[in-house]
Length: 206
Image (cartoon, rainbow, N blue to C red; front, side):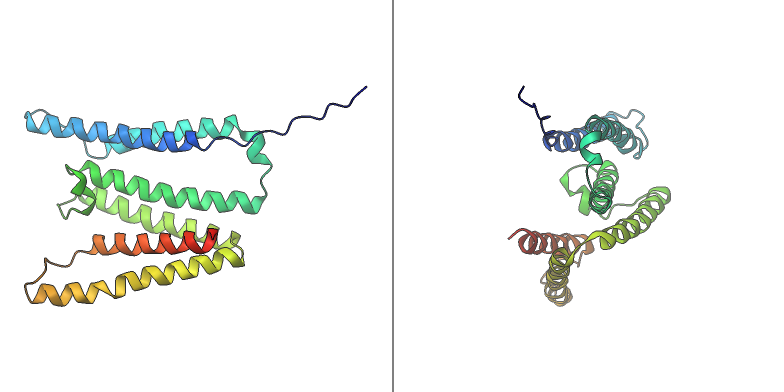
């Protein structure tokens, strides 16, 4: 009789995590749209944090189901690989949650870069979440990376540093001469982060 070898389990599709992330963002956007419409009509509005919290809970449950559905495949990962992806997932989740919370308090795409007033509760919550969460993610990340990724990480960080060092003083002196608007921290942060990511992925996957 011919031996029948068990078929190798296929890797789970990455389409579902992406769809879950997009669905979570759309749900949070729906809450923000409802609040904006209610405010324009003079009706009672929900607290700014309700939409993001509900969306994140539903998205988290969907992601947990996805991981459980393919638990056997994920169990084959080494402890190092698991910690690596936990650190990346946590870092992405921090940025995702922060963006949704900040966007929920304003209208339009400029919400992420708005300097509008923020409640003390939301400001303190975001600050604590960013510092504590990012610290944990970075500790896990640096415990798992190899020399190749560490080099890509360092070069990406250097690119992000230059992306801040060059435009920031130029913008500042032009503002002082009334040739540019006031210096904004978040656009510079976004530029630095984009340069960091671009160079990191280039040196990691080339």
